[in-house]
Image (tube, rainbow, N blue to C red; front, side, top):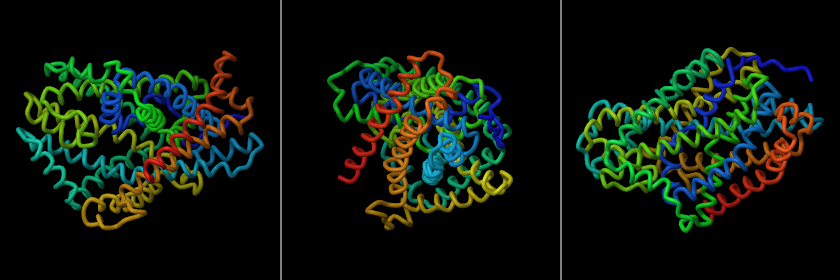
Length: 454
């Protein structure tokens, strides 16, 4: 096969792709969700099970997405179609690319609302709004923000503009330039906050919360949580990794690159936990506050600690960078497809997509105030968008990608693109992508639906 050329450009090198894909994977969930679910479900025992699922489910599917993206050298929609045709199968496999691009688009519409909360807290921390604040006051600040459609609209708009400005720049002047700045800044801020948490006097308590090895706390539900998070944390099923993979240099090893991304994603989540929980414990606050941990519990902690205003500001800047880097990858598949399909320049494409997703985001943010009475299948608009993407579209996307890579692609195509030198390693990947990953993702899909709808 003659190598396809990507009209969008390519990453300057393998490490830029690693940083970009890590930026896609590292999002709001890494900062508060993973550390919390690890601590509550057996600590080190949970982390061990989670890592096994990362290796057995997340990494094989991520390799498959990168494989298809690099082979097709186009948006996920067109890459799925072209690679399916090359394998002598129906071009209708492009539907999987459509579902991924649409899922990313829908996720962005409500993700930008949450990211807007983060931006509001960056401003609030800088302004000293949380100095000496109590839990009740912090809860009121957050609830007042949710009840204010004008404030939510402003921050949602700012975030949409930030993201679309980067996507508008294309691969090299947009995505790559932003990655070179954002990801090192994210790592530096994380290390600064880790150093700060070591001065709280409760660092040992935070380490124990995260890493105590308690198999008795590892229930069947905890195993399912580990399985689900191992899939969702790597941004699988939404076309983002496939799109980024299409810009990957030809000579770069897919296997070792994906392993590096998975390792960095996990390290960021664990270091975030080590940075956050000592601060929580030092202030005798609840580590199990869920989403409220970030917007109620931590502001109280920062407001009561020496230097808390500065480090609280840095914390929310860190979270904002994580949200920004993830959101860029959510919009890239749709933007790339529109450029390919209509031959348009990036700027008008991003303006069109930005306006549409901005309007959809307004519907999502209204769920907390003026539109709280609007219900879709018993859920408000925000919760419905979350449900349909996380519980239906992403698992199905991951399942179809695994089946496509394992059963539709010829061994010649996958071997050629993966370029795994050891036959045993390729055979292991084939077993994982054909049997283990599809069964695991099907379990996520079915059990999530039972839990949500039961």
